[in-house]
Length: 221
Image 1 (cartoon, rainbow, N blue to C red):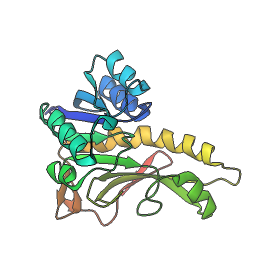
Image 2 (image 1 turned 90 degrees about the vertical axis):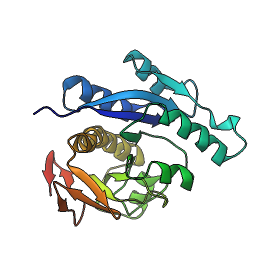
Image 3 (image 1 turned 180 degrees about the vertical axis):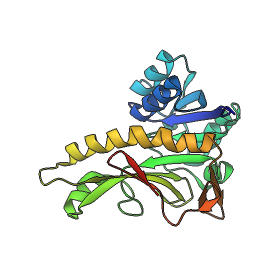
């Protein structure tokens, strides 16, 4: 039985490397999804070029044109709703979203964050990981909640922190992991393997005690 295609809208603010990973995974058949639109809150970013090159509708809604966060979010919400997506994917979307927006898309909005949540929420995660002298660092895919970088965890990739790592080298290696696990997590949604009930994640009808981990190119449950 073939997997039905998941309709998704992707929100970006920058270069769109995760967007490209999703586009590529769809092209190879690893991800059964269709990107209805890519929306950026900044004009002239590389991610919009990536979308247009792939024949995907690319829109800009500049947050600077709105009097308040709520007004921007309201316009963004209306624009997304036109496409009736099954899932909203935040791929480097650098905006803190209002409660109304998050509530509207509750249970159907994913984000990717460059740390092993709940550690290092917010910005500058790679330098903060180095400063804290952690032995492992990584990236998390999670459902979006009203708590910053909170929400139920779906999947994490874990890498070892090397003695000579800098924030830049960590970022580069984390990016590689992001491009693997984000399409993977979205495919789980497409296959209806993931369910969120009362802020808890179920995979294949089993309650996850913790997120599955992608380590050394292997999935550890």
